[in-house]
Image (cartoon, rainbow, N blue to C red; front, side, top):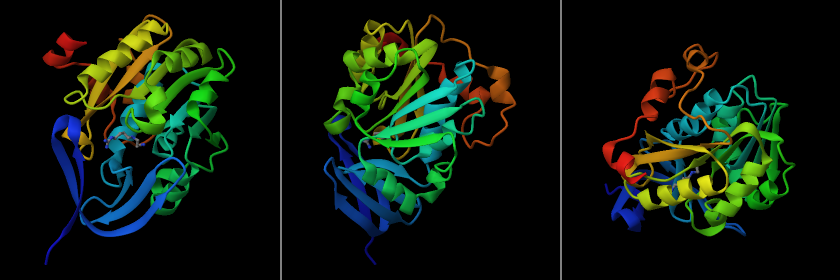
Length: 280
Ligand code: AG3
């Protein structure tokens, strides 16, 4: 019998990524975007927003661990964390694995993303009831602009591509709000697309972060099969000079389980391939 595939054809890389699906479980148009949920033969459930793959049950651990743990093991003790976007709650779950975190607020513009995650990806939402967790449904740009100065240790930007609702999360004005909200030595980490397909974007993000006042900037590549090119990155910036070290011993003896992140992976992710060294 014929099989059905969901594919995301990605124009900038002239390639597509596809999953064999068994059923479309849900589709809806929210005030912000179109959200679809599929079931697949080999990757578990999929979440798709405006035709773009957001996550699969099988490989989201790569992205969620790499957007959370390198930053949290770089900061000496991040007590207050803000997640911009992240509506599927996977990043929030990873953040709350750190006992030093006293409060983590997730500021997602589209409440429907979270409601559908609760229904179709309950494993990602298992920390939502943690007393340290706060779920807000609000515009992240406005939230950061209104944030009390020097009140946050880590801002994580877990957004869609830099088009539509997320566009304003990739410029110097937004980074300046983050800079102001951060305490000294605070960190900003943002999903920064594919090094193979979006090198110019990564470059411009890094320049904008520097122009907003961040002194040290690093881009960490990691595999992510469900996104265009299969290879993704996050970019980390610090309100302070140093980003080369991390709490290596803390990472090596961490008190919680991960499936990708460990101290050696962290070290390896800080190494850049030649073409990235040259370009960045
Ligand atoms: N992260 C979405 C990254 C963008 C993917 N882009 C694409 N498929 N064209 C947010 C979901 C994980 N929390």
